[in-house]
Image 1: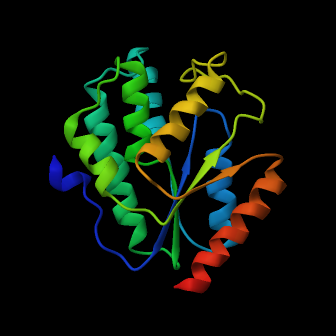
Image 2 (image 1 turned 180 degrees about the vertical axis):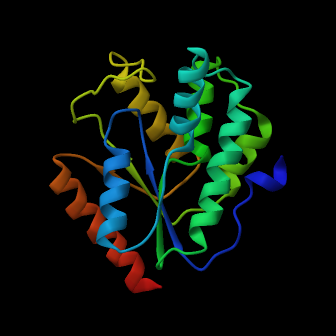
Length: 188
């Protein structure tokens, strides 16, 4: 499993959209990729869990997290090969680690936790909870948004990851995000 959770080396800037459920990560990843004419990595956890729900009417079990982590990294490594200078990731292993710890009493598979720390990204966009909650079959914490946001922020701080908080309307978030991405591109 370890080899499957490692990032493949690429000369591309990697940015993670990071934060609680229903905070606009997917929308931002798509819009940023469109703006910069590049790839974005969808959240594999959603694809995997939607398929599981549709087939078995069951949500996530702790055993699913390894397959989810491997799928996320497979997609990231594949899409980084054809990215145009920057790759936007709609989640990463650190997000899987946070969810694991929240749902499984502080536990995260040690290999997932290891690569959540070792895999590197140039910047995280932490999405704030000031957008309306959108319910679906996988989302289950509409009344715990503040605590979930605090968990995500703490994970970034504890891991000493570079991050910018995105708040406000989609346009405000995009404007701020684009400015930070352009700074990174100008440095490379």
